[in-house]
Length: 416
Image (tube, helix red, strand yellow):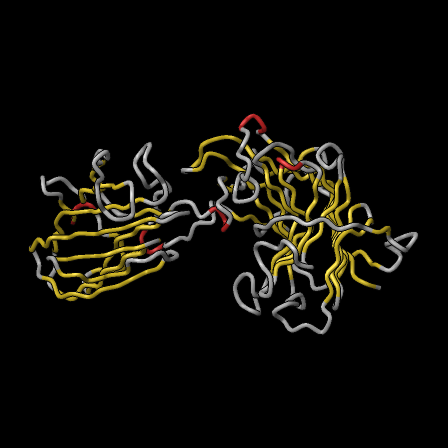
């Protein structure tokens, strides 16, 4: 579900009178039971932010209320109390820049934009001693991650708890000073923002790589079977730091080549971004985009009726404007009626159709894996995102929610 601009192509009618003559049905879900079959379907949950289990559950809300979420910095000061003599390993996980001082010695110095990365430093410390501690951090954009942990011979890797952190006034935790820039400086007009943070343990945002605003759940109000349809519903509601909830459901089965047909009615409303798509199951060629992505359908609410299909590869990913890896078609009734969205995937060609009218194709043409990673297993994913680089390009209309995508059936065929 990459981010891109759009280019249009024309489509041609299928040449066969019955397109199913050359296919055998091998798997289907008609959603005729009362609940989702969890042996066939799984869920992606959360905001797409990373998890770090050794440090417990992280907070999804970082910066103070009414404070910028991008291009800011923080300086935490206080004291570290040590209960055991020994060799200590300190862990800082940061997205973006971070510096860590103990007793005025610079232990970790990673002052640059970066994904959430774990850094370590080792020191010999004595029991019942207090050491000055300072942590400096800047956030450039996207989600924030800041975790402060440790381990020693006396205890395993864990979060540094508030009982071992002391402010200059004797309270548990560290005093954080927040700056509305990345340089740890106050301008003449800035008012200092200060608070006591008992623990440093935040992992926020993520947005599934697209700056999306929703939190994905598997709750029935976001994903369910109703009247013979799979319903995915995005709602305007606050949940674990996000302002919207939705669902992202995926098949537990995977396929290589075949005809994959989904009959669906799409959500409307500015700020919605729905997708019927596929990702590799085994990631043989490496992480995204090396192993590829197939977007059977993407639709954003501010451009209702414009259906976009694309493939992402190591050769071209993200913005696919002007490449041969994307096509569009107008389906004016896409949010009001059901239509059939079809991927036909062969060893040397991928094509996408709506109601058996082909509008996009992409050929292997003796290309290496960098342009054709589509010789491995893929699984299907259905979701409604909210906002994001593309879906939120013209803002989010909160009056559009709840927004639903109805899926009548999913059918998978193999070539006869």
